[in-house]
Length: 300
Image (cartoon, rainbow, N blue to C red; front, side, top):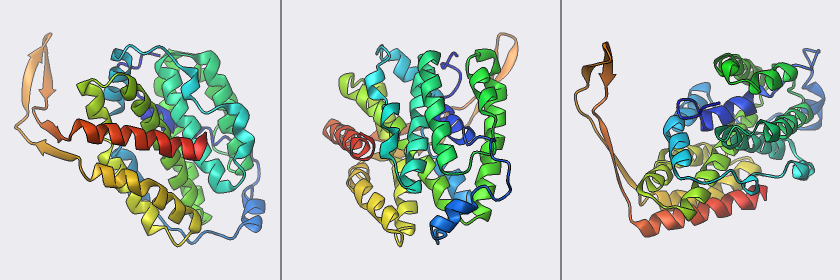
């Protein structure tokens, strides 16, 4: 799969969301879990989830920068699948499923399909444990993941699967699982970017770190709004130092008139807008260290 033109974090989301498989046969497949756990009072609108996902930095640019950094694939960056048993509660498992999805984004940038299978299997196991394994065919997922020619079909099917899953969770009063999957995916992706930037702090990598600002702000907002739940309140406390650091980052969007240019005989839309990022190098270094600390606190 060639990720100079495809996805990084979005691919992670796709893998984590879509691996909520389709082995369940009953309309009440989640009911045993619902009986074991009190229905959550957390309500997060679909628009909020969509805005959170859209706040993620450009996956195309991120994947290009990671490739350009020249770092070899490092399996030590990934959460070991053998540690999956440490995730016990449904909340922990939802976070882990998202984080493994973030790892999938990194794995696929480097086209390590032999590693991907273990992570797909881990994501599937977590979805089974959460009793929401009813929206996707795991065997099809593996088959599509092995062929770059199937990536578009995989993305489309995966997106549809997540939409169906998210609707189902909302109907069952389990909005919090969607939030935790998204958070886990973002954090693992941000960790990978930070780790690479820590060893190769080019201007492009500084920008990739700094542009996480909007994502952190939106995640913090959702966690605080849900803080009547102790788990979410704890997550909000844990991410607050990172949010405070990002408050020192100034991002300004400079709007300019777009134009049309002819390229190779075709008219191409050119966006002349510019994003200006202002932040001290010392703050970037602190953000990198705090992102790595937060991720390791939750998943290492």
